Image 1 (cartoon, one colour):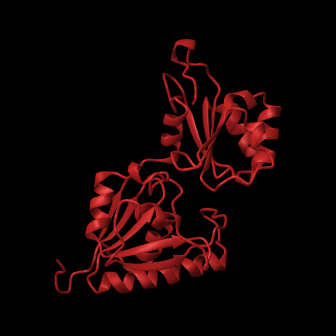
Image 2 (cartoon, rainbow, N blue to C red):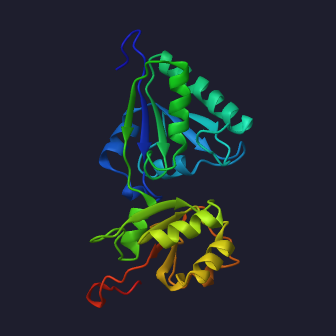
Image 3 (cartoon, one colour):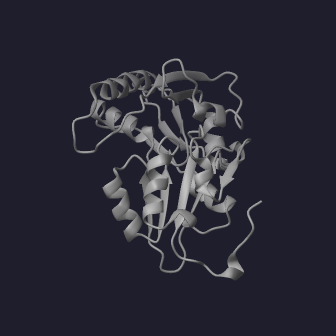
Length: 257
């Protein structure tokens, strides 16, 4: 129920890696009870993956859906950002703030978990520049890496493992250092970087330690235990690579279906 003169609450809702059944009960409840949704998309004329996933569990009838574009460009923290990206954040913030100031709660469904490389936090930071006080609730979600780990029967971290989570857009020198340093490396957003990643892993003798999961838990899921087979393929945006350097024992190995 809307309270007169009270600002609405912004919900950043993690909706998991892509399978609607991996949305948490709390995420579903919040989305069901919130009438205004942000539908984040990378292109003006594109579709929102987050909206598509969320609507697999929550009916859209009666919802107000705000189609907001967030261009996919590199963001370097502590540096000046691309003006188009900053403009998009501010335009989105103004739209959301108008609803919050009317007392409407607004839900921002975001892939995976809001805390991990999510556009939702850029929107939140921009809103906080415009309003010193803001009602916010963050709903964690299942990450793509957790879902991928489950699909390939391999732990993300075990024993004394040290784990690194890395966007594949890092330059080769930085990736090389990370791969040499950590026991387990999760490479995210690899779908357009496979040539250089495979070459780097081959250089380091780690090709056979890597597994690639495309569209994890969704229709069309593909698991590449030989990552060379994924070269020259048009991989989906939902593609993650796990690199584990340590064996966990033959007794723990499970055949991937």
